[in-house]
Image (cartoon, rainbow, N blue to C red; front, side, top):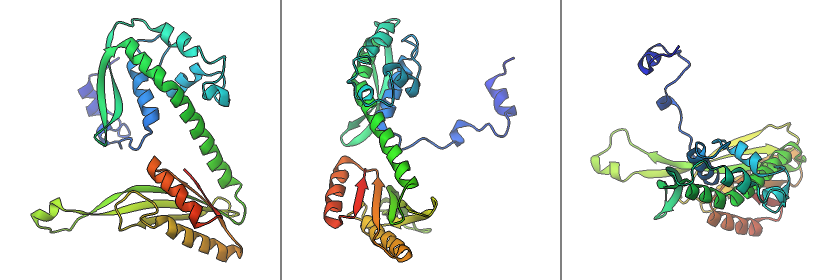
Length: 271
């Protein structure tokens, strides 16, 4: 039996929450999300295609663990998109709409597009090689991250650092003009795993006086470098090697690698 929306809202169990009360998914990967948005638009127009990234991936490659398959250099995989996607279009002349995240004037915007099903499929085809490569590299990086945490030597520290947000500083009672001139404090989160600790570590909540989203300009990296290594070297009584994992934009990655090369030969940064 079915019930109306209003009746369900009135009698719903307490553990079934309205969508508006749930947290938004934020900071998701643009490479994954743009492919996911295309799959959502095409799922009803290509036979056997669902809006599942994992199912889509398994359709296109022989083995997800093989580098040749994920790098689009496998002879057996090369025609799978044509056979399983292009040839399965139910009506390539139908007009549909789809969304994509694009950069407009330096800002990320979710833009709607309209066109033929075939146009949307071709856009998906263009994005597929970079998506496969991205997934493969991401999985390898995640695997290495977990391995190095698990197998860290006694003189090794594994540190994960991420920029969190600019925290807005407000006064309880403030004048009107102050509302339009807020000050911000950048917050960085970090966690260090210490070798030989059985997976235990130390968390950090760090603030900076620079609103530039740069770990080095805000001296966060230098703080961690000094304090984490000092803490562990006192405990272990020997030299410490640190591995830093972080996520940043390409410009900051370049700056990060350069800074780490000139700061210490015993530190490694993985981005």
